[in-house]
Structures are given as C-alpha cells and as structure tokens.
Amino acid sequence: MAMRQTPLTCSGHTRPVVDLAFSGITPYGYFLISACKDGKPMLRQGDTGDWIGTFLGHKGAVWGATLNKEATKAATAAADFTAKVWDAVTGDEILSLAHKHIVKSVNFTQDSNYLLTGGHDKVLRIYDLGKPEAEPQEISGHTSAIKKALWCNNDKQILSAADDKTVCLWDRSSMEVVKTLPFDTSVSSMEYIPDGEVLVISYGKTVAFYNALSLELIKTVDAPASVYSASLHPEKDFFVVGGDDFKLYKYDYNTKEELESYKGHFGPVHCVRPDGELYASGSEDGTLRLWQTAVGKTYGLWKCVLPEELVSENSDALYSTVPEMKA
Amino acid sequence: MKTLVRVLRLPRGPDGSSRGFDPSSARYQALCPSTISASDPVDCVDLKSEQRARSVLRERYLRSLISMVKRDVKFTMYEKVKVDAVFQASDIDILNFQVADLETPLGVQKEALIRCPDVISYSFEIDSSKM
Image 1: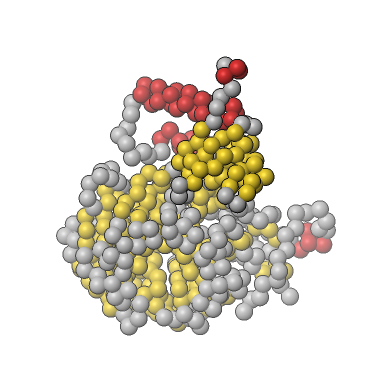
Image 2: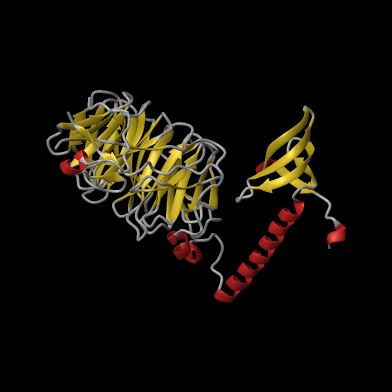
C-alpha cells in the first residue's frame, strides 16, 4: 500500500536553521546538531529528533556546526568572530577560538584532535585541540569569504569552497593548493563522502558530483529551483536537494531521476543531511524536519501500520498532520 | 489516495527552562568523567578532592538560595542598574530568578523574572537570630 511521507518537525529554534550535521553511530544512538541564526545551536537525538540540549555561549548567529564521530565533542562557527568547541555530553563550552571575522565552517579530523575553520577573513585555520593556546596553522589563498572547509582523503587534504567562486584542494603538510575548481557562480554547498571519495557541490540550480581526490567531474543534475544544499546518501543510491522553492527533492543517484519531492517547510531549505534511515532538513522557517528514507517503515517515531490495523484503530496513539502534498 | 505514515509522537522540543544535557541520562552517566577537558588530565585523587570541594560549594550555594527566599535582595546589574526585590525562587540552572515587588524606575513590579546573566552581584542580610 502506498504511504505518504510524514515529516517530523523539530521546533525550538527561533530563526533560520543554516547548517546541520550528524555524528557517527555511537552506543547511545546517533546525534544531530543544528546551527541557527538565533545563536543557540542545538543537539538532538538523531533517530527521533528529540532535543537533548542547547549550547549556550555564542553572541551571534551560528553559521556552521559539526559533531565528532563519537558525538562527544561539538564545534560551532559564528558571526561573533569565534569558533567554539563544546563537550557534547555536558553542553559545556570547552574552547573559544577567536578569529578576525565571521566564522562560517568548522570540521573535526577523524581522531577529533584537530579543528579546521574557515570564514570571512579568507584564511583556513587548523587548531591543535591538544594545544589550544598554540597559534593555529594558517592557509591563505582564497580571495573571498570561505563558505565551507572540510578535511578529506584521510585528513591528509583539505577542501574549501569560497565566495571567490572556487573550490580548492589543499595538501595539509605542504599547506599548498593542489587543485582549483573554478565556477561561474558562487558555490552554495559542498559535502564530502569519505567512503568512495565523492564530493557533492551545488551552485545555481545544479548539483555536481566530483571525485574528491582528482576533482574530476562525475556527473551533474539540474534541479527545478536554485539549490541551497545537496547531500548524497551514504550508500550512494540517492541524494537530497533543498532550495529556495521551499521543497525537498530526492533523486536517484544512478539514473538522475527525480524520485520524490516534498513540501512542508515554510521557507527556503538551507541544509539537508541524509543518514541511513532518515534525512534531515533545516529551513528559513526555523524548523528542522526529519524525513524517512523508506516511507512507511517502522523506525524511530514512525510506525508501520498494516492494512488490518488501520481498520481497527481506536486507542492507538494517532498523529495526523495537515496533509502534505506530493508535488 | 495515499495513506499518511503514522507517528508515535512528535519529537520532544526544548523544555524552555533549562539548557538540557540531562545529567541523569545514560550517556551522561557513562561518559561524564571521561569527557574531554581543556586542562591537563588530573589523577584520581585530585579529581576526587576537587569533586568533593565542588559538592561542598554547590551545597553551600543552594542553601544560600534557600535562605534568601522571601528576603529583600539588592541586585547590581549591568548598565549601572541597581534594584531591590524580594527573592522567591531560582530555576534549576540558575539562569533566572523569580522575584516579587521589584523596584524599578517605572514603578514596583509585582512579579518579575530577573535574568541571571544580567546580574553582576546581589546581596541580602541573613537573619542572625537563626544562626
């Protein structure tokens, strides 16, 4: 029987949600962190969207947020010119790293020992979290604000996307640029999938997939509206796109066919993150929504209801939302 | 006509009064001692005595809050603000104080919430007859 997607709305933020990140799978499940212009990034349980805590301390919009694999540390990048490292279990602020301008992006290495930051001062910085007092290593080269900075190739290289319409691949030891990808327009999002070394870049209405090591183009897909964020499912069978038409699109990665699209948000979708059984979206409307990968499957808060059960419903906990249209 | 997927409940949102990170959660209990700290690792004995000191200080602070209930408290706040009020209660994270009869330049506010981050210091008189 065909089922309609019921997204789970996570409320709590009071301004646009601009970045989302999942942790790895931990013995306590997996977690989701959201960056918001209200300056209060939140940690949620990944499979249910239940709020766990809010990281309090930033004095400006938070533009980027990330978790380490074990979800024991969090890092955030904000408009108050700082990047902060947090204890993701207690919610305490551990480090505040002063920058010279708005910080947009933060990323941990796999061992959580180093933090990469990038922002409006156009410089990539690498902080040794074991020596927080030491000056960070700096990599200059971009001529405009850095939007996103990511570790790649087993933390041996760095990928950065900037408003100067380039994506650059840097070698960490030499701190030199290895390759530059020029674009006609500013890149709106960049995602790195380590398993398979795939780079997902969105610009204009296009989503492009590259080999992360060689920066060779694999394929491009065009969306119906300007794309703000695109992300590939870890198993590389589908990717999710969110943009300024308030909708979420799900595409088959192999055939490039549009599989599903969903309305639900009341504002442009700024970020999407798939993670196995679900994907999360964050919007200008201040909400996060969780969407099922396999619609109708029992997982987290979603319950698979067989046809017989539908007939005999009475005291079951029943949640029905305003019907959402499949566009 | 497609059927909507059923949901057990809505995701829980922030509780509005605290910043979360429930210390009684399984994850907190298991990971707390070993979560990272910016300072150098301390050995077991130092950690125990530090925790003991923290417990004593916290208990003393909480008792000070209890003794403050229904008393006149003078708050010194940012922007050169000094106000008087009768203390009623604090929230669990000591982020807000509930006060009564808050004396402000606009008049006396019967009930008010004072944001603790706005407070620089506060003072009140202990009833010496109870000591």
